[in-house]
Length: 115
Picture (spheres, rainbow, N blue to C red):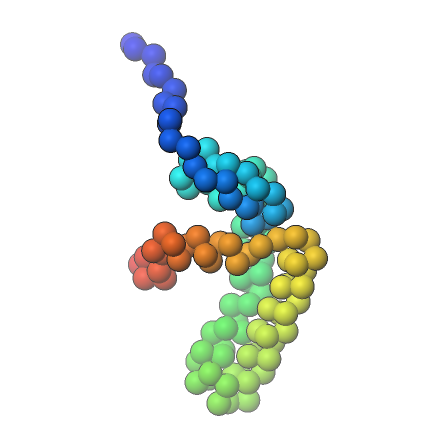
């Protein structure tokens, strides 16, 4: 049986900023977004927890015609408070969640891709 050779790309990538720590690094492949795997895991774990907290409020706001019912208005208020709190936490920790959105937009990602 022939041994597999490790494929090494000769392509170089532009340095980018890690959304988790803010350090500039050079990716080793075109899908790399974080400087180390631990930062990717930390980012996704934190956002999984945040998503679990925010989803009921988001759905209530959307169902209530975006603020026209009392529950919908309350849900919107809670969403805004959570967003402000998490934005402040991220800023204090040096995290750049906005970089993820920017990269997804550049890749042409849309929510319909989840279907």
